[in-house]
Length: 476
Image (cartoon, rainbow, N blue to C red; front, side, top):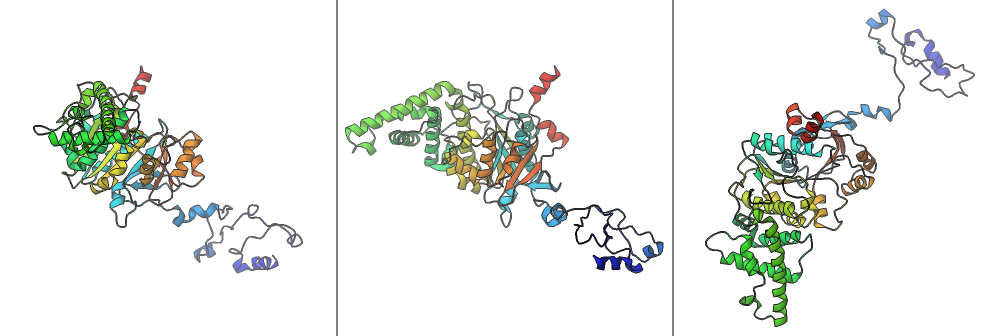
């Protein structure tokens, strides 16, 4: 303290020496010197010294701490992402743009993500649908050799919310209804057979039967009876493509099947009963949804446009129709893309729970390698993940995704599930509970999570508005 006092008394150094503390020398050994009572660095008032470049700060400095000053370290506050892909929002901490595209990140060298699949989840009204439409559909379609297929579940004025966007790209949405007025999807379409083989077709038929039973799995006798019926149906088709109704007579028919000659009479009876059980299930499915499944695939089902919308908004939520159409559409698309190489395809599953929360997850998991080979990025949009069993195929699909966007999860258990499942920092769970509308937690690959604010252009805000009906009602 004495040395500082002597330094301060020298005329040539008086302007740049540390400020003299406001204590006497007798008090110096007993009083802690803290920065905030002092005035800080003194301003230069001597004109001659100023001309000699002895400048002092123009403003009085403010006290700080090392922790507070971390924000000034550009290595810490730098942008969380690069500039490749599409701009999807703004980092709350650094205020820098967030740019990402799962397909671009997967194809980069070195790869930034090991899987191009995406999970988007959050409460109703938090902003996930708007995010999906802008960042997974509209913006990626601006990139070269990109297209998008959407399973559009949200009703907006009597049709799916993507219908207007599809027409903007010159195509009509593919509309599905429970009666015969909509589009048909053939479960045994040759495109599916060409894409995934008879094993893939059998897997699809198994899943559809299970969905018709309310997710009650088939036993081994029923599975064998279904495989045999499918094989006989495909082998016997000559004049046209087989359809689901062609399978029904072959279920339970084993009397003339050479593969079962060596079976005991009791085993043959058991196999016959198992086939009839599956037949009754499929009879009930066709009775209720014949307009969807009882014929060849409609000619309107195509992927030639930049955007294809499977409009399933008019199908009931409380039956198997929605997951059945998603499952058949997924398998048909895989077969079709085998003949249309050269594009990267983003496939959006609105209400993605139907594909990862039930038996359809087995199709996604089994076809992951094929999907990557065909350039597919699956985007699953859902409300929460706590209902997915830990050891299910759906959980494996979620954990395989390398791009995650989490909007507000108001329930603590849902926020905690996200934190554990996606390997987020422990304190992030509380942040997820308190996120504002339009804000989300973003994580890709091995990078740490980032709090992002989604930014929309005026046109994007208009076409992504999902509250038209409520806004209209309020106006009335």
